Image (cartoon, rainbow, N blue to C red; front, top):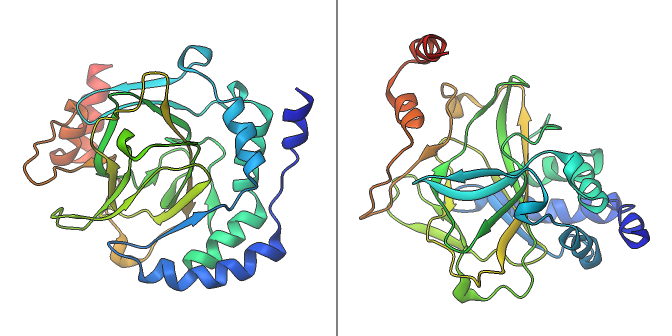
Length: 271
């Protein structure tokens, strides 16, 4: 316990991050198929090892379970069910120094973190699980803000390539995955969240039954977004790869075709 508490004192070093952010900005802006950056070793290894040591097993916390045609995964956003090292890392990633770092890397100013971790927090996917290619929801209903950035921190030590689980970044016409990113330990990926930033790990994991693909997910918002990115509020937009037919959950299929006021009325009638 004392070791976990000691590790929970981690904080980012602004003097080290700022010059690094300036070097990463061109990489982020010029990346294909959409703006992203991959950063290895941003955290001292012992900080994430402490997170991994207290990472809850499926039966140890009230994980939200997704088990459908588009995704099979577990998610935990309740910080009261997380250990001190985990809460410390999440808090630092929502703090001033790291947000300044993200703004310098991405050129997106006025970033606002989400203290509720809607859709984020801790994720784990067991053997056979997957997440089909998709663009993320673009509007935070509680904060009333536009979603602009995803940050993923991977926690998978000794992750064999044969296990799968690579993060795939797909182009706008869904003709090809232009980037394949293995989810290895102490790898951070940040990418712009738009309605055509298609990503996922669509093939079922083949890791041993006792292993899981583990990560931390944080999302960042702004009050408004560039005109060319504006779309009506939507939930997750799942996509089909060439030769694949993704079967959408009923509610997501309705959201594709039914205007929001009518959908709200239908839900009210159902309640």
